[in-house]
Amino acid sequence: MRTVIQILVILIVGTLAVWKLDLGKIRDAFQIHSWSFLIAAVLANFASVGFKGIAWKGVVDALPSVTRRTRYRDLIGPLFVGFLFNALLAARVGEIVKVLLLKRRMERRGHAPPTTTLLGTVVAENLVSTITWVLLVVGIGIFLPLPSYAWFASIALGVGCLVIVIVALLSGPGRQLPPWLNTGPLWARATRAVHRLWGGVRESHLGLRRPRQMSLVVGASLATWLCQWAGIYFTLQAFGLGYVGWGGAGLLLVTITLAQAFPVLPGNLLVFQAAAVVPLTASYGVSATEALAFSVVLQGTEALVGVAVGFLFLLAEGVSFNQLRHQAEEEEETVLADPATADGPPGG
Image 1 (tube, one colour):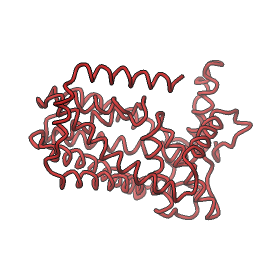
Image 2 (tube, one colour):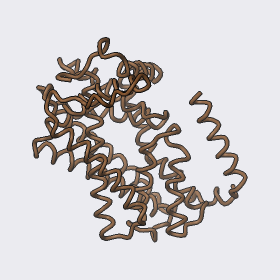
Image 3 (cartoon, helix red, strand yellow):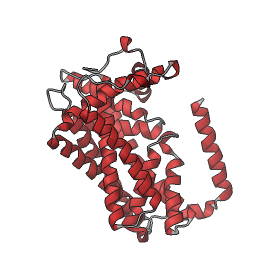
Image 4 (cartoon, one colour):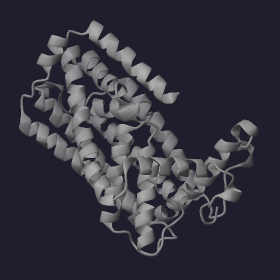
């Protein structure tokens, strides 16, 4: 049913676009003014994934149950395959896929934490990354003009993530979520999943209490966002939209990141375009056709890194796309299962 709804949304929006937009102007808008800047954008996006791998490795290595440091090559492959799944499917299935692949590699080396613990490292890395992103947005806003809605949305998201991180850092090894969250049968499956995942998130933050380890994760996360910011700016330059400047690239970093936080369609198709077109047309006077063409190519530079490189890493794993997808769906059901029949995180 979800797939049918997604297809209907794409068809409706596509029909409206064909009806309202001049296809001839859209075709003319797909003209690259500088291929060197476009290549630089692809390289910047590639570097952002590499730094994200360093940040995730910092969280995994900080786990109390991990006695041997992970190898960077053991994380970078699953990370790219995860991007592949997130680009082709909705609901961020790639987050579970990359955890399954990492767990398999760690098992080959002798020890792997439970799946929920590794899922907790993904959540922890994303929380720290989001807080770092908010700090970057604040820094951009100090020197370059940003609309008020960018400030409000960024700070609200950052405060929410900061609260979760502080609670996780201050929680003791045996602490659980408050029992009042379990309010009835309707919430039973959700609260079971939250309880189990919270154990992994809390354990992931235990090692981050060390300033050196937290600094590593924050520094790598900052480098990730700087590369993404540069990738957007380079793509603007490639389209001859350099007058939008670094401030416009920063605004696009805000709107696109917020849109990608709530994946509705595979690869966030259409939502991504709206997040790029609206600020360009409303704040910088870019024509709708130019903005649409830019948004498609910008998403293409990001998808090229995730899909093309992720597919190569998937081939190296020796497992099919459908097989990994089924395993991820089964694992998702396991997380929602009764704790008596599923492995919980250590100390949870």
